Amino acid sequence: MSTAIRDVSDTLIQLLRTEVGPSLPDPDLIALLSPAEASSIGVRLTLFLYSISPAAEYRNELEIAGASIDNLPISMPVNLYYLLTAFSPPQDPTNRSLDSHLLLGRAMRVFFDNGTLLGSLLKGDLPREEPLHVSLQPITVEDLTRIWSVFPETALQPSVSYLVTPVRLRAGRIREGAPVVSRQLDSDHVVPVQSPDKES
Image (cartoon, rainbow, N blue to C red; front, side, top):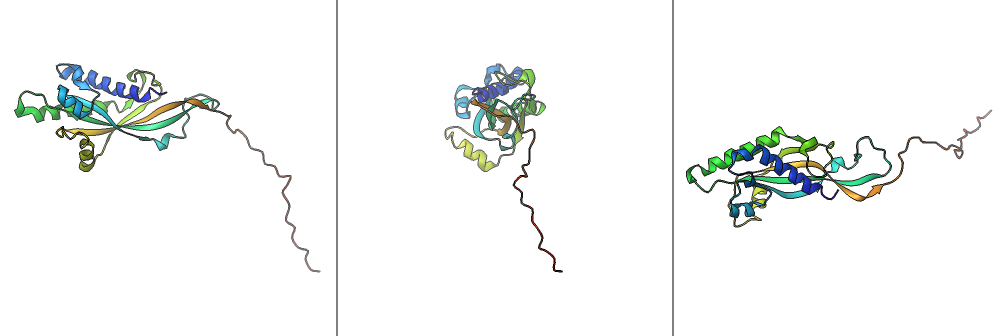
């Protein structure tokens, strides 16, 4: 399923707009943008996909619960890493930092309350029965600075990192073959070992 990454991003941004949007003048002030893009157009909260890595612990799982092993779609499970960033409103410079901290806290609470996403919360073609897990990821000051260095013209803003897993990218080819249900041991060629004759 080549739309998985897009659909995960849409799921997260729609969740934020639904839960955090009412506290803003316009829900569209929450956007799927890089921090550099957001600062130039007045967006207040951004979600930015900054890294993708293999989800090794899910590689051997069957992809469709209850399906036979024959003709299963092959998938590449991946981890998606997002940077959640809050921006201050342009007015009232005295309280700008407090406003961005409040907004970031609200967004973090939403992801904490919805740490497992499934069913109607999932957008696009994401399988409704396959949960996605959203978790806050520790990130060092050095790593955060390295990410922000990609946006040299943008001042550092309050940001946190989130992991979404497992996101399964299903291929166009399928896994063929039936499961092994029994095993037969062929002992026809086993040569017995004879002990030497005892001396009389």
